[in-house]
Image (cartoon, rainbow, N blue to C red):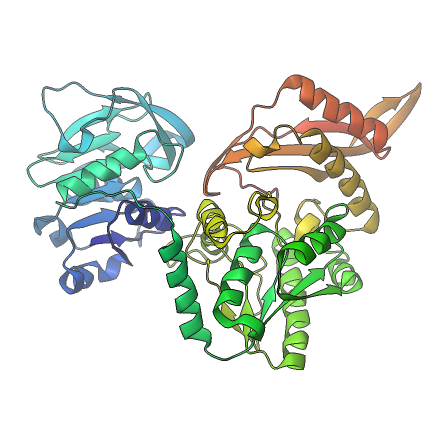
Amino acid sequence: MILLIDFGSQTTHLILRRIRELGSEVVITLPEYAMQKVKEVKPKGIILSGGPAAVFEEGSPTVDKKIFELGIPILGICYGEQLMCHLLGGEVKLGLKKEFGPATVSLKSNGQVSKFLVGIPDGFIGWMSHGDLVAKTPPGFVTYGTTQTIPHAIVADEKRKIYGIQFHPEVIHTEFGTELLENFLRICELIPKRSGIDKEFVENIIADIKDSLGNEKAICALSGGVDSSVAALLVYKAIGKNLTSFYIDSGLMRDNETEVLQKVFSKHYQMDIQIINAKKAFLNALKGIVDPEEKRKVIGKIFIDVFERQAKKIGAKFLVQGTIYPDVIESKGTKHAQVIKSHHNVGGLPSKMNLALTEPLRNFYKDEVRKIGKVLGLPDQIINRQPFPGPGLAIRIIGNITEEKLDVLRKADKIVQEEMKEVKGKLWQVFAVFTGIKTTGVRGDNRAYGETIAIRAIEAQDAMSANFARLPYDLLDKISIRIVNEVPAVNRVVYDITNKPPATMEWE
């Protein structure tokens, strides 16, 4: 058992996932309950997560200093390292600059060997997301790693088995991150065992759903994407014909989306699936709305209104959603984590609903969901679909939503999808954005004042962090030429080269 103390990091749950994948149980607790939880679960090790606060600010989350005197191995990550050093007599201060993204961590040769760094090479990439840093280590601590801007990127008190790192080993972009966590588990006298999602794992999920829903009827919000499709099939296998799935055409879908999904559903699903045309309701409700958070909440409310009407007709008490963990942490945060954006199926939901939520994938990440889908026998056409946001094109249009803007964006995005067919299998997501920015151009010998389309292409594994894709210039050139020639309203195309963090996947 590992006790994970949550200080509000967007990736706290990702730490849980990594430890779980290595074969150890994890319990998450808030810092104010940490000592009480230690007594309850008697952990073999403790991990202090990252977080958005500064340890020297009044009211920032903290733990009882006695936790460091228990003789239990402790690993502090980012804010966790800073808090550890702050409480034990070191110094934390504002860094020269905030860092979001990769940095080279160099191991420091100081004549000492750390069990935490067994098998870790000198010079690897660590993923940073911080504004403060440890300026002075506490008594008894040795510095084992640095970066160009961080003097104490890896610190340890080997005698007390207390370790601190400024970077995030849990994100996929940190090299040897899993190996570092494995080393920590060994220090905790836990044997790392990399496990996977297999048939037994999925059957246990189905059994849990069956126990939860019993003989009650449920409806499913099915979009055709991998999350909702996997959630629907899990629940269908648990309760059979007591599940009815609805696909709502919001008018915010990509070109030919509804028609394609109809064919997929009829071919691969045995479930009762109903398609509802609600274009007018969504577009009328979105008129004049510019704020992205308000867009998401409006869309979430309409979805629920439609589902509640349908549920009443068939006597359903539960609403099944394909909510996954990145939706949850970005939408709701935790006590110490900040809200990033309200996903329509989480933070966008109305406070009062007549349906109880069933979200079998709520604790999983996208790549885990794909593995579950594979075990369930879903076709690659669904499993490998690029993520598409529930609010659809509404959050890929900056500003208010109109039929004209939707038409322009659909045409531009269709071109992007067509040209990316050969490479998009390597990508997490690729799409066009209607930026709402007009610029001056030239068409023939005439001045043109037209729209700007942005292209976003992302490489990722679990949606919590991502890199922009290094697409070939010739491909980008071809996409740009096609868009400005085939979509007359557009006279400029730009390419988004921002990683996550600091950006999110979508623009809104």
